Length: 532
Image (tube, rainbow, N blue to C red; front, side):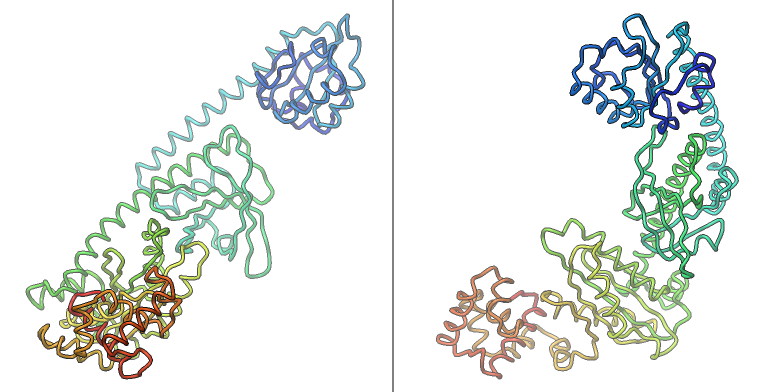
């Protein structure tokens, strides 16, 4: 009920607007007799004050100004004034302040009782609240009946459209997927949100939305972010244009948002179950744990990967700074979604800092290539919504379905060789490893050690910390600054260690042969399980 509507009540029908006409649309939520000026202790937004101004008689001009500033800040809806023996008419100063702050000042005849106004206003509010309560019960009952039928999101939106006479869209922001009651209105390409001030019947955050379309057309809408526990971002968009919703409609929206939360939770439970099943199946395929070719065929069919003739493994590993490590799950989810959006048919296994994708295709032309994978991950690493991270993408060769474990070993070999060095993002193919393949094909640790320069072996035995410094220095193209940052040393310390190694062991990092021997030794030691 607004102040203007309250003037239709019997007790206020003879009221005269003295000042503050601009606030006649203010909503009334209660009524109170003004007996003291400590309004901050008992005043509430939407209250209609009833007074003879007797309580204000001793206020100075400055104090009166401060009092009205408090009324405005609290959100007092209006003032009803009745002339009494001590105050025969509304003071001009009060009328001026009412006009300035947009607080309607209504003057009523002397014969009108305060009790009549309170009963009329509060009775109207109680009737309105009872109507809202009955409507809430009815909508909640309908929602529970709808929930028991396990509706789709489209069915929920159809219910909302019938209740509000407005189309609606449910937007999955992370995947840029949407379901709408009107495809044309759901086809917006950009949404800009501005939060609205909360109302008394709103549990969720409401936003004014501006929707932009490819045609250049823009439309106004109401948007409600739908909270979820899966780290995703979801929004209910109601295409209402400039039309505002009353509390009854808001209660319908509140119930629909709650039901959408339940649907998200249910879908997440299904997705989690499928994730665990598929994760385990891919893990066993990669590890060669299935006892027969028939079982491999069956699992590939379950994963939807049985139609291809060529199989390839893509391993993606990410590294974050220690300060951002708590956001690893967010980055891994983003990587998974980014890769799956580009190649929807991939299955994957996720473990710690790695996601291993299994790709099936009809021929060599459809294999994953670095020039496709790297830009995809690079774009993701530059997003402001994610913490900074570097990545290693390892692509295996292709083979038939029964050689999947071998393809997985190729991707893991790349990770073993280059996974420790995360200064820069890399995307590598197994067939591009060149001479490194010789080390990967070694059958025994002794054979691997035989490839290491004897001077490096001696350094490894006598001063492993100096060997670590040399390997990192060579990996960083002899940059003392980069090496120092990675090893948490001073650049001069790095320079001193390199000079010491040259003097004591005869390894000169500026000599091309020695530089190569140090780099190769670093890779071999990684294959031996050591981290130089």
